[in-house]
Length: 445
Image 1 (cartoon, one colour):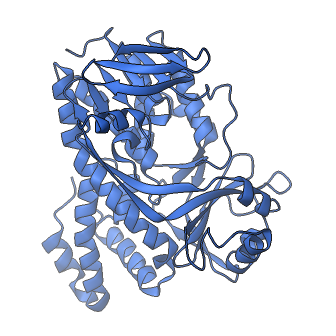
Image 2: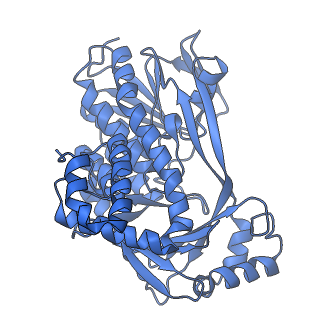
Image 3: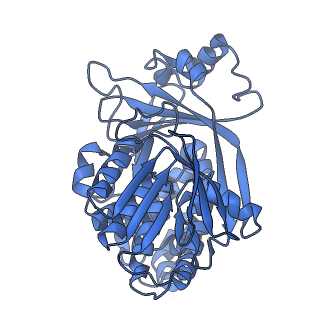
């Protein structure tokens, strides 16, 4: 079937990727029905303890600009200039993300961002929003999607072709395709879980420096905190499931309090509801989803976390999903049928999804452990100096990922590996810097 304006299209999952994609396609004139099992976030209260904060970077910003919603979202953003690293004594030091004025990332609340996107999508007559509609199955044989309307309890069917699944890491659409052996899925879970907590505002102000992502690295685990516009911070503890320092070991209020006072003394003093929140909030799983293929002919496509969920340690899950939406929107003009569009989308995005999945895992080790290593700090300074001296050839890998959407994730991974080798050599032989840079790094386009 040819992608043409006015054609009906299902999007399952009205989270960030689904609502942005619905908006982009509605602007093209597609008749989009956007389904979600949850309540309408425009009138619902955000659930506590479930990934409330996100980091918005250049790739996501570019997609929001395309959709024409960035100005609506700006009031919800707080710029973060770098990592504020806290040691056990309570001393802290800022490690800047970049060295140029605009090289910052932005803390944004998931609920506020989702609401802004849905409000923009709802202004288009081409978008039909259906909340409280749970997708039960996607049947390839019958070419139908089966839903249950939670308000009435009734089950109904609608045509599967064409459907885009943006229903997250636990995608029900992907599950149905896997059960039908149309796709294969592997979920690689970390041995660490997470739990979200709160550092409340003090006298309506942030208790810590607001323009930084705060991090308490402790080797095998860490605590982070991102600022909110109301003066609070959303903190997230990443901790092994089992072992001496683990979630399974924190079974009583006394153990919880003792652990935080010992490991994060300056944060613990700013968390008056620590024990109650820790006990009440759920533990979340962390892992990477590998699925193949992402599409079945022109009938159904997996996009965003439904296709390639990643761990959150590079702050790129949302940004990668938004970039998916942007690439999909670009490809609509290049194809005469959904089948070729879906196939081309996967061909272009899969190498980048695999690259950012790898870099996100690597960044977890860096955040919880390597940031305290003197060699890491020295190499970081060397990389910034090389960027200053050779700006057309050398950009630190983190900067390529976060601030340069014109450089693909796959290229950032490849080029970053070359650069790491150069930095390691220059650490011992600084006089070889210019020769190594010109020999191994062609100019950036």
